[in-house]
Image (cartoon, rainbow, N blue to C red):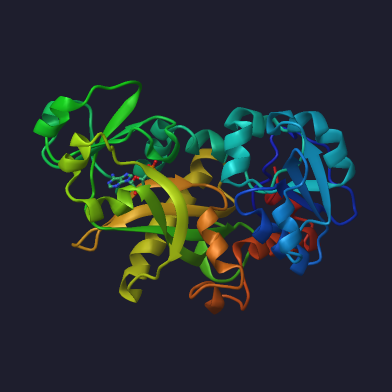
Length: 355
Ligand code: AMP
């Protein structure tokens, strides 16, 4: 028997009728609606203002209904309408970001996954405690510039798209750094970035076992990040800095990647450690999460971040990926969420996958 996630319930019980899969119209919503539709769920899109027109261009990803709200921050005021629809909200990056982590945690509507995870993921300090205590390797962190012995990246807390991040080749390069807010100085890891899309099911009884459920690898991507990815075309960073151009990491798109097969055991070990520790710390993650890290030339994977919900890189794999094809044909992350809801409902275990 798994863990019941609602403690205490922030919402009423779902009714007997089929839940409506609902999310904010943004980020990975087309894929979430498409997957829910394939599994027979009604769908509802919450739009800021009138429904976005581009949904008309994607009939298989368009929700059955829209709930327009003037501001995303006002969603809680529409809780009655959502509960009348028997809605289960699927969180994605933009949903949580626009609403704010605290407001998201308090929403009086059922949410897919364990919302306790948000408190651990949205705070970089707590995230590090979670990952390091799980035995996951992270980039080294320096509390004082005098400790720096190689290239570093300075990150501001809550910086969107790495805006204002500062890169230095060595300790000397940090002399020009003038902090403008709370930040961390981190080892700049040289290697190849991978964003690994996992799904953890606490109710599945087959597959790669972790805690009382199973861990699935459904895809991988790399992010296209402007303007850092283009810097090499214009020459060395110093030259750009002279011209007043600072590197940024604003995500503009995603590209599919696969890892050397011999590195998969390492990646599964990292995913399993993160899940197992989440069970000890806050009752466990449920559903999609993304491990974001860098594989070094020594084939060591260092994790700089995790996202504990569906990431936009999964949009590459609406009809499956090189990995999910080996789990089940045509399996997107959106569809995997719908399958989990369906299985939990059939087994009377919804309380283990929604909170
Ligand atoms: P973050 O805000 O932590 O997701 O970082 C934004 C981007 O900065 C990532 O997508 C990476 O491209 C890059 N990055 C973050 N941390 C590191 C690191 N320790 N070493 C090298 N690159 C990094």
